[in-house]
Length: 508
Image (tube, rainbow, N blue to C red; front, side, top):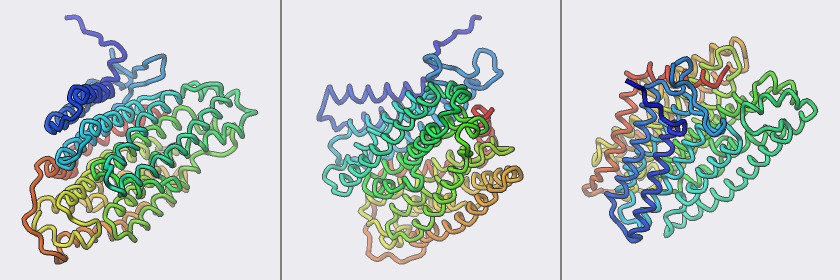
């Protein structure tokens, strides 16, 4: 029986399904612009996201992107402008999962919102950009995918047009995002001027002839790091995150802090492993670029956690917490060239997957609280478990997992990252400092995470609450994220293997 060979572009099916979903939503909106058919709109977004997830998982299991497998292997598209490998598929799975959870939760959260078709279209368009970013293999396609992610995100943050905080957050996000995009594209032009190439493998080859352009190339790399630091909410490009997450609808805060952050990191992983091999780049610019990520990781995790510990607003606490977690993942780039660097990077990617469930779930719980009319401060959450024990139990799972308390998924992903960093520190002693900082900051995070658990379960409520509504979709999304945070433990080994395979795909 003959094997049917799909065209090469079909390897981008997870991203193309998301793009097609956005177009279907636009079509629905154009047919009936005043449509408030919430089941149809939300259902279309959820089905599209789950279809994208299913195809990405299918491709991974079938061996697409894995080297040495007949009829599959790494697939290059459009002359190598896109590449579908284990790294791309791994992050497409994270992005599709978060998008599906956000789409489900938005069904109840947006019950009275006017622009629902536009909302779901923008979410799936932003997810399309993130998925395309995971497969981009050229600075041109990377920038286009970056803008396809960013432009819908600006609108989503400000979509609550009658809410001053949402509009203000969207404006701030747009202004800082425009600045970071300008910095990134200027860095792209400098790298092109120094190497004469835009495809990532060709840039690595062009380093051989860039000896006289060391200063130009170094400045270009620094600007690329700045653009990536904005997307991952790393210090000092983090100032937009607390404002945007606080003002945006809670599902969008979840979307940006999880899926968008994952897209920023896959961009960083691919660019710096493929385009700028350390030894060749150091010969040209005279300094190892890993030092930039060592400093970023240390400062980002420390600033994020200390700032989170001082917050009285729950959403801002989670925003600064997400900055701290960006610092943990940056360890994967800081130790990428040490002996065993693929294990450090793989562990960082594993943490991103677990983080996708627990952080998304935490923000969706805040969305559930907002649905009930609960205020933004810690004290407003006092005694909420008496009225909503299931949701509050799920939030306790998220908080303890984010803090790295066993036996939840966050503990094992942090433990894997810590042990991998320690092993790599034998070749690079600077990583010992990062391993120590990871432990210290995780211990600090337990303070503010447990503070919210204490408010939910131990403190007496400041007001008498009547019976709370039970929004089915929001509840389902929160509980599903909590279940996955726990259920991921039995599947930890195969998921860790998938992360290590994805890391090995780009580390030669």
